[in-house]
Image 1: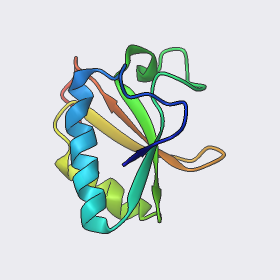
Image 2 (image 1 turned 180 degrees about the horizontal axis):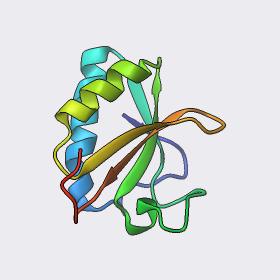
Image 3 (image 1 turned 135 degrees about the vertical axis):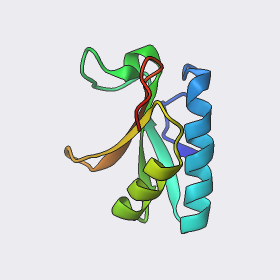
Image 4 (image 1 turned 45 degrees about the vertical axis):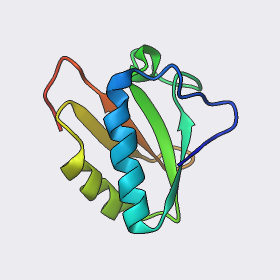
Length: 103
């Protein structure tokens, strides 16, 4: 796992740690790397979980998008969501909903 210059993980809620650990294991299994590109920084919707430190974005290299998405959805604990967002540059968004039990 790498962290983009200027991005810090120190503000992330400790509840996000399981997601980081699971994604690290999945990328080792897939033989890919991932870069955390945003946490509490960047341009996000005003009600985004980024602002409460319950979300991060990342990109993977080389991309395995559908495979990683399926594996992560299966392995992330309840309360987590992972989405493949297609804005100017496709990336993954992971968020934790402490008030919900969603997958």
